Length: 433
Image (tube, one colour):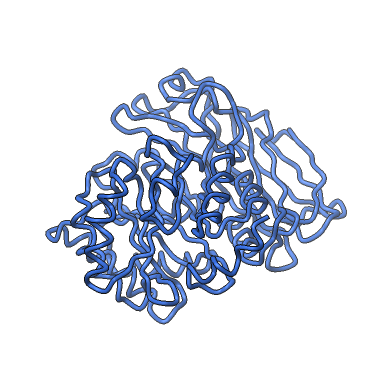
């Protein structure tokens, strides 16, 4: 659709024709070994880098600067890069962002355009005017010889997304955050790509870029701030939208945000100590989602336009299942915002090397769904989740089980803990039989 603009965009970004996929990373207290593991695991999962979310720019917060340096240093000698994403929801002073950035922007692993422009992003910040972003952030950096490539999430701007690039001429591109999930509400709905479509068109018309968000779901249970953003098949639905719309970049939300539960990697205990996040995140491993994310990244970077073009790296199926170990009918569920969007289902996303497979879905050890698989990405949200054990999927070829995934957590009809209503997902990757 935007083929005529490819060369100008490549010149603008200074990157090769290869696309890039980043994981949003919540910077927190950590040690060097943890940073090294996160970088190693993210590389193995196919990511090109981290967007480092920092909510502090204070020089006294050494835990923050130490963690960023640990992560950058851990990537030395690899092609894995990182850039700062300022979390403006914490009230950061725009005038102080530049001095914080230049501490890291010359590091060999800081993500830049080919002509040396360091990438900078944000979470929020649209309540600050274009003029202030220009005079308080961009111009002072340029005076120091640093010309940032600015690709923020300003979806808190009152007019977003209509006319965004006319209003914010200071930016080089845009990232959206809220569109990564279905809109909040009391009815079940699929995730929409209308905002993404508008921003891709407008960005390219302005000679700028768009980074499209990809996420699994949201769940949070913290001090009365309790909400759910639907995740039954949100991840594969967004993958399908991304391949169809062909954005310039993708950002996965997130690598390690235990608080909102959309982590696809590890999170570290010192990062969540004293927050209450561990009450609903500990013991809920989400790394099984990486089996779906990795082949998607490969397909996206190879310019695939349809989920049938997503392939496993080898000859065996890959994928995952996920379900909530608490039924939506639990008496505590109505305390969660948007709980009406939740469904009692066993969900799966499986990438098959060819046609000729079938996929069986079980709950409480009873068959609740049987599907013919096709080459590429297959996904379903299968109703019929039941209290009890035995949540699983089996991949069959010629009547033989060749891969399977089985949940480790029984489904409960009522919460076993009177202080928490846990809607986090049990996620399990496929294993070959």
